[in-house]
Amino acid sequence: MIRIASGQGFWGDDLEAPVRQVEGGPIDYLMLDYLAEVTMSIMQKQRSRDPAAGYARDFPGLMERIFPACVKRGIKVVTNAGGVNPQECARAVAEAGRRAGMGGHARVGVVSGDDLMDRLDELLESGHPLRNMDTGEPLQPFRDRVRSANVYLGARPIVDALSGGALVVVTGRSTDTALTYAPMVCEFGWPWDAYGLLASGVVAGHINECGAQASGGNCLAEWWTIPDLAEVGFPIIETAPDGTFIVTKHPGLGGAVTLRTVKEQILYEMGDPATYITPDVTADFTTIRLTDEGPDRVGVHGIRGRPPTPFLKVSIAYAAGYKAVGTLVYAWPDAAEKARAAAAILRRRLDRQGLAFDRVLVELVGWDSTHGPLAGDPPGDLPEVQLRVAVRSGDRRAVERFSREIAPLVLTGPPTVTGFAGGRPRVQEIMAYWPALIDRSVVEPGLSVDLVSV
Amino acid sequence: MNQEPLKTVPLLELAHARSGDKGDTANVGVIAYDEEDYSLIVEQVTAERVKKHFGSMVKGPVERFRLDNLHAVNFLLHGALDGGGTVSLMTDAQGKVFSTALLRMELKVPAEVARRVRGRGRLPPERADR
Image (cartoon, rainbow over all chains, first blue to last red; front, side, top):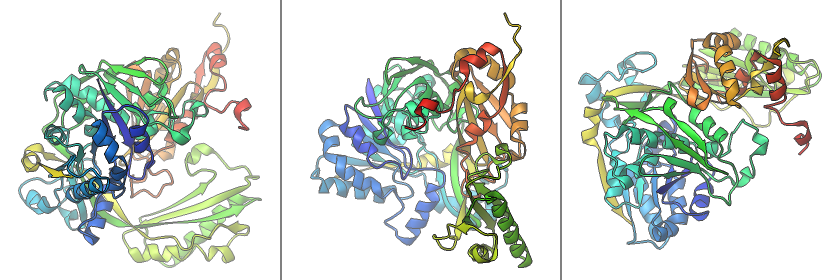
């Protein structure tokens, strides 16, 4: 049996969680997921300003804290913290290891080859249109606006790095689930056509990939019964060689692992549950069987899988205009009516200037910003409401002008208005997501695994 | 024994849920608290009914998938997130709280079911001032 602990569910997650996983009890592997769809384009922007940037910068600092314990206990770390610059990330991790006194005691594996940015023109010209999976449009007309393009890689290169003796494996755009099942493939020698075993690993990975969301965080079912979320224990997967596994957490930490918390995470960001596509296997989430194995222990078994598709998914980010969000707070009485009146005045001022927006969205935070019309009409005695107006346009000047039209409402609009301490709304460039497919034969020969000594 | 008229209860009392996003599509996973209520959910919380429930909030079609082993159903609400991700202007651009928006839906259930599930999904009054 091996224990694979989840330590990070996204870039910006609880910084202490991975330390608690290492110090709170026995684990064999620590997986850290840093990448969301939008993260790669942010990292690409950082690398364009500084060639040594473009990865999760808090990861080397974390490694400096836990390196001695990982070396001493043989805990291996698998992460996609490398972002768009896994080589630099690995170099920083090796330096962190030396600062922690671990020089000569470990190696860092680096997976690269997922970044297609330099090959984009060659690919488009050689019959790979990289059509948008949602709209069917080819990428070529958007080519000049593309900021990043990365293939989702599976577990194979991670397994190669672990087999080669890496204590820490740093990847770029690996799938979130591969970070959890690569250690299983490596430890148990699962063949790549053992689809049921791989599919079990994928389900374990899906449970691990959002950190505490499987162990009591963001749990809707009787949320008030989840103990001590201040020191929540992130999930730990205890996997047997036959692919069955237990979801649990360290006993001394907060949170809870129950049938309910695990089911909620299984359904998170789920599409067609019978067809959960990964680079290594297509998993069937409708075959999952769960058992209650006692306090904070949920058993998972019965999972089936099918061969993977001939394609890999490409995550492309492209510049798609600008947006800004302005807010003001209106107080009782008639708070909602005042906010709506202010929004109407703002709309007239924007229209009069002939500004072109693709969309203007008005929400009343405190009333309808989450449930929309399902919230019904606001009562007249609503104590306060926040007016939130957001605009989107391909024309940066229009969005900038909008950002100057919020403050004037304080003196030229309805009364009892406040909450403008934050200054003018910030104009943001929109990085839109473009999912596409590519033949795996185009990508896989270009993958490489290097080992860097600490 | 089943002579009592059916009662109306919110889905909130029969199920918990979690929602998220994939591009411009929100997903809502709905999970029965009690196995025995799963069939009521399958019968009444259909894709058509969910589409009607959300009205103008969901521009595209609604798909439903069953996970019988988990006593859960998964809904895909296409065109619910104003373009999704970083394009969306919505407060809830990632569809995180479509979960309870769906749990507002009302179901007709036998009176004994209504009694068993009464008050579920909300903080019990005795815990409210903690």
